[in-house]
Image 1: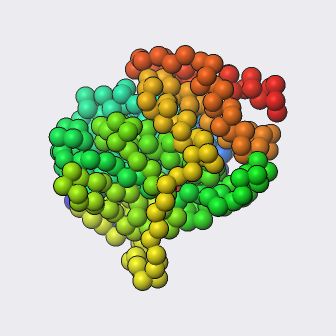
Image 2: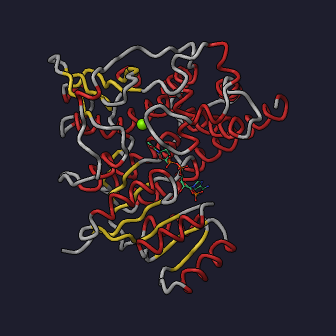
Length: 394
Ligand code: NDP
Ligand code: MG
């Protein structure tokens, strides 16, 4: 059997590492074609030693030269390239079957779109890419015949619970609502008056998942759920009002689909990203992910509550952007990326994050266009507007 060739964009991150763990368990079926990293060069070097990809892609020429020399000294033939064009090239290379899109943030849009346009099986972790480009991305998938499989645990769960004909639209496939679960993050029960003083360390200490810094802060503010709401609308042809957010602190039910006959289907599992990664890699088959069996008796209770939108204004801001559509979602995402970076650098407080996003959304008009140029322009304008806020206030 010929092995499937896999490119892992963002190999050095949390999702990238989990992906390589699953791939290593199935080396007879999958070969690593390319690995990409941005700052963690030591981790990328070790990954190249272990997985021997054809290509490694890094951010700049200096990194590329240093990594290439080390690999050559170690007798590894991996070719090291650098820059945005190289990222898109390893995503679209004709030898590649599967692309794991696990770069964080807007930086992942162009290579993820390149994989979609080239008709690959795209395992989508980089939700920001879809939030920004929405219709453009989905059209690329449709036109090229790419297979888009969600890695976000909630969307992977929804995908597993939906009928095969969900592309026709929610109501024609008998779906009433999508129930998108949220853990509620580390600040679900913190007294409101303390929220403005929480530290990046507290925000990144997620109760159930171990993830990269940016998504950890997004989970704490519930912007992650807002981005996921937009992501769900695009992936499953749903309207924003057909997606309901349900807080479920145990993170065992990864999401649900509510049908018109009153049936509710759920996918459950331990909170470990190797489950959706293995599912999407092998779909429609099933392969071992290394995740242990769910022990429901040890879990004991499954609780559900509605989200506190006063505590988490980011969720409402994202819902508004989803309803406006067009470039509003790209602006929301860009403002959030700037605000989260400023919070991680301790330039602003946690409660300033929604203030910045709201300011950006209020001062910029959104356009209903779907070409990449307009999306990038909206992203740029929103970042500029957020930087202006920071220059005045931080
Ligand atoms: P990490 O921060 O752990 O990893 C991000 C990856 O992107 C790293 O490989 C990083 O390289 C690379 N990267 C960062 N900036 C750039 C850039 N400018 N250009 C190219 N590459 C870059 O994030 P996660 O793995 O946690 O998340 C990745 C994506 O998956 C995000 O979109 C997130 O929302 C999504 N996701 C993550 C989940 C999780 O459990 N972690 C769950 C669901 C979705 P380096 O480390 O070398 O700097
Ligand atoms: Mg998720």
